[in-house]
Amino acid sequence: MQAPDVLVLGAGGALAEAWMRGVLAGIAAETGIDFRTTESLVGTSAGAIVAADLLAGRAPEGPAGLAELAELAVEAEPAAAGE
Image (cartoon, rainbow, N blue to C red):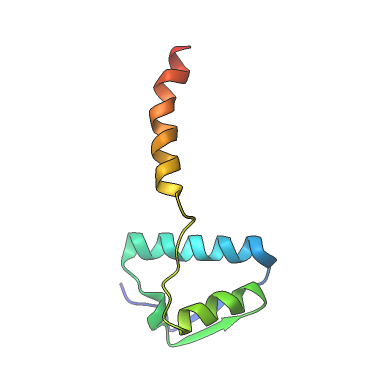
């Protein structure tokens, strides 16, 4: 898949910024899209920060340690079910 021609990112403060980064990182991981190659980026508030990072060549990243937390949750499920 190729990057979209235009990417519009909204507002919402620090939480929305983290959410947008996580969503873009997830989409990129699953589809191979490189959002840094998007032709036009539009952002308001938190979206402008994410757009600026993409324009600077920084790839969006999901929350640090999320994979490790998911693995711990999966490992803990059988123990919790047996109690």
